[in-house]
Length: 516
Image (cartoon, rainbow, N blue to C red; front, top):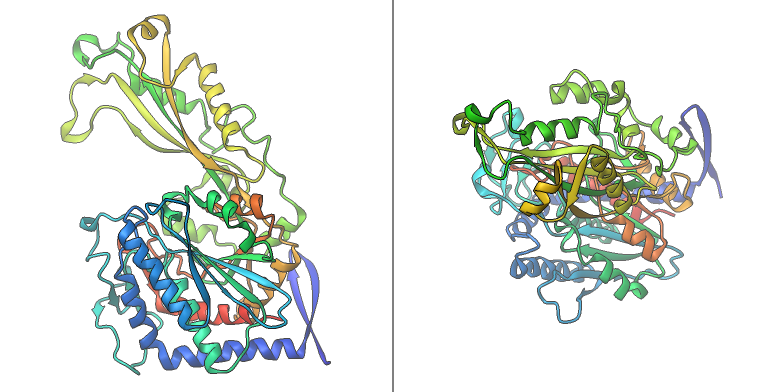
């Protein structure tokens, strides 16, 4: 068999990959079939997607979340998948995991595709239209896009069009993309080359509180998986394709400090009574320098070191930090402008919110009785959530605070100079697959074959998914292949998906499902 040698330059190192002509031809044929299919069926694809987006999908809305689950069962069964709803015993109040499988004769690889079908809660008053009534725009609202009608059958579809609706990008978008991919390959009589299993999570946006129970109970269904491919998230800000090898973990705390037991007139008591807001400001300032460095003892010690393979992956990223700062309207970033990707490799401490008294027209000449701060901790690989919380609490004690778990009694107040109530949030660890993992490299190759642009390799995302449970219970590698546009208003009002990103996804998924 004739061979093609593809040369890839990463971080100054030259890597030679040998690919058979048959492999390249098969994948090119699959990508071409995908392109031909969506060009001829684009209107039908997005009109069907519109109907799916009409079903509300907040995890706590059990009736509608089960409608979403049944939609997935019905649509993938039409494409030949064997589907079922995985349930927890006597827990009809918990969203089911939608499981499916497509078995391919003589396949030597099993890919498990993960998508979550729930979405973030919404406040419709903050949206430009009803979030459960999808609207099509000629381009993004920010760029002056105007509402247009959904296309008629056989009408040409502009890739710059955008659908606005909750979960349009996060994370329903992979569903019409996968369905169209299977249809495209079937229409061109192109066979899959891997066994496929589906895992549709119904409560990811609620923190996947039952994911561990599902994985433990149904572990046998996934024991033959060679690689998990998570279909979630946006492409890089530059628009280039990317493969992500992990995510940060997460935990947090809420801290309340106390001044007088009741609000005081600031004229009568100002300059004498302790001010809770001032106490909180000083406490928070002791935790972190303006440069970004966290001053809590031991905060970085458990972090896994950056490897040479990670450094080589960094080299695949464009130097986009100045553009990101410009887009955000800021002239500086922490750690002397260190690249954003490198900061993903370390834990962070973020003040999510502070509350004490009132401001603006509601402000009063009052010394508030307490101040509360919500602290978020993003975890890097190696960090234990509980251990990181312990470090923060130890620091609070070092600043002279007595820590309580409930509002302090009068006796506690009179026996301690400074008091802090600390409430811990649940969390989970970060997880990463090595950039050198052979199965992950196959995915990178498939994504590269579907695009004319160089693939960006992200050792870890800045955001969080409950991936640690998958790696700990199943001990299988995983990667993330995102398709959404980076400006999709994820989790926010007016969430959207650019049609061209769905087309990109169909080509990419076709390449992955037919890779040799």
